[in-house]
Length: 344
Ligand code: GLO
Ligand code: MG
Image 1 (cartoon, rainbow, N blue to C red):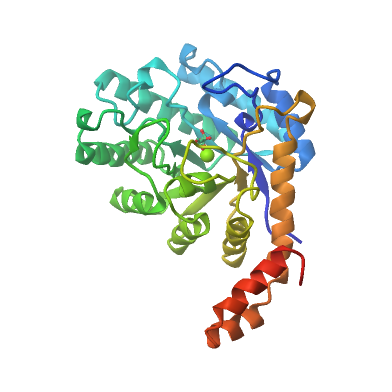
Image 2: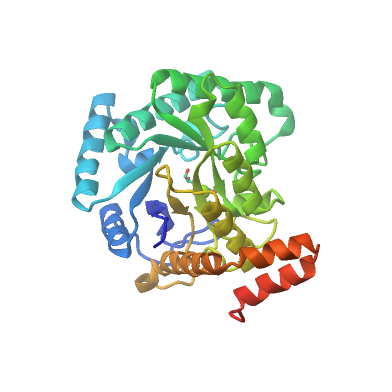
């Protein structure tokens, strides 16, 4: 029996529009997506603040909480949990130079308002944490802000969130670039350092996204392992990525199967999920995908994960031990290849 439960956000099903062309599929209503996610076997949903409360700017704090309560009822009716809420600090005109590291005081206040509202929504939905994907935090023009100032600003902003709510956890989703040119918090190493510098490190952890690790030139399984070693892997965004280029969010495992196998392996070996963590997906359908296949990339990602989990279950640890004792890593590597190719 699998130890894992899956989660997903509504943005994983989208119309196919990209920076170079318009939509190729019709928009699907949020609640219809959520119903379908439940049907597919997902246990929890991830939300941006404005996925949970569309047009969030138009409402008072009280109205925002009310709308979140309505969503909670819908989730309850489908037996779904909310995993996290993430302030979407990259769409609004106020966030064009980032949020927490914005050079405008007014825009900074706006970013903090969104962070506090995300915490309110998380509380209403029963989600234990907010996720900060620091999309525009960094520089477009390297000389426009000091990296020292920007780093300290991130720490003090997170401290304010921790003070605002005594229980909420803050989970940073690191990424080295895109849409920003140079980010301030690119890897799990950065996340751990930021965490240690806050007023409550136990409540600040990370979200490893496979593609973001690859974009940093790092191995996703080792990024996960690094965070696990500090008990700070709060969630994961599994997907895949063809080398260092634009962020692709391919289906899990389709680009590098061995790398995907090792992600499942490190999660499994370290009891990931036993404290309520979910296996989150962050995958995009291809632009060519037809309307009727809008969820196929999610199904494929789950299926690949489960097939790899079965491979991990069959992994011969005695043989591995022997290979290590004999320093016969050639044999160990060949064994892994055969396992993945269905030859053992
Ligand atoms: C983009 C990110 C994005 C976040 C999501 C949740 O590169 O992966 O999809 O995960 O907005 O914060
Ligand atoms: Mg992500």
